[in-house]
Image (cartoon, rainbow, N blue to C red; front, side, top):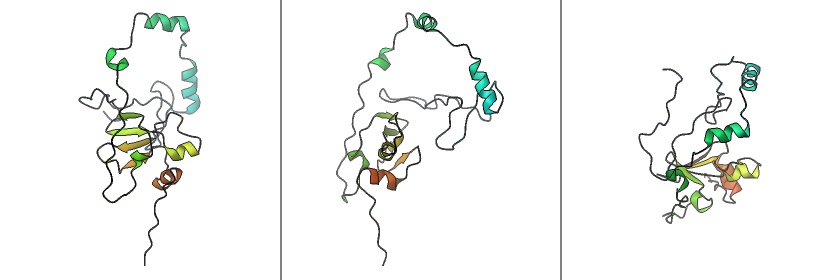
Length: 165
């Protein structure tokens, strides 16, 4: 089926990992900048907002009734804290981003943390814009669009300029 995604995408997850996120309607995908809509509403923003305004709101009492007797599963509640990865010395003494950030989560093959450049710009309130590859931490990406140069500058570790002679 075209346009349908099935979650979770993974066959299995480790005890300290999360699966893929689920895309919410009206959200903008950070990688492709596409907006995703409610299926049962029109395709214009005003129609989407009208649809959303007509959804029944639940009172606190209704929410408490729905969740009465439920508890957080031990597999979630008892999760150990995210272990900070050990960073071996770089053979060439090069930059290692894991020496400059605090890992906040580990999921989908990446460490996730706050982007230093976003912080300087007053963004990344959730603290998860920066993905760092677990397999090879030399590779990292800010999902809000900060460049490598911006991230390094925010850390006080600017990318060295190469001189060509």
